[in-house]
Image 1 (cartoon, rainbow, N blue to C red):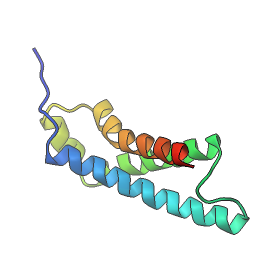
Image 2 (spheres, one colour):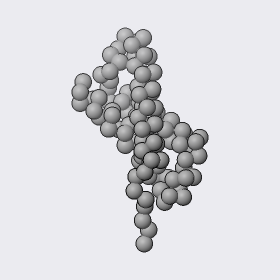
Image 3 (cartoon, one colour):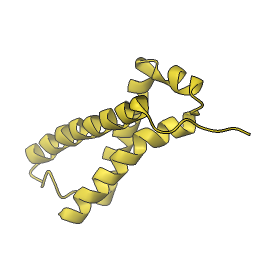
Image 4 (tube, rainbow, N blue to C red):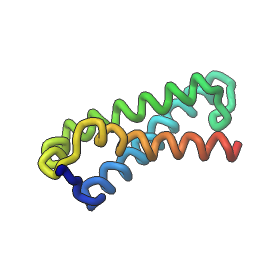
Length: 101
């Protein structure tokens, strides 16, 4: 029987860095939209998906660059869970922003 370790400091760190990466990607895209004459906060669905995918890819690259995927694998966390740890805060923040605007 396989079991996983509950969320700990490493997973929370990955998720919080993913939120910061999303904020950075959102700020860069917002500046570009502002320079183009569009609203930097209220974006269309394609732009929101682009922002989310870019932030998730950047977050996964960050986890790989820090070699945390090795530590997480030793703790019983697979690659799909690492992607989910990065994607969850990004998607939740993007949905929250869409609901609030």
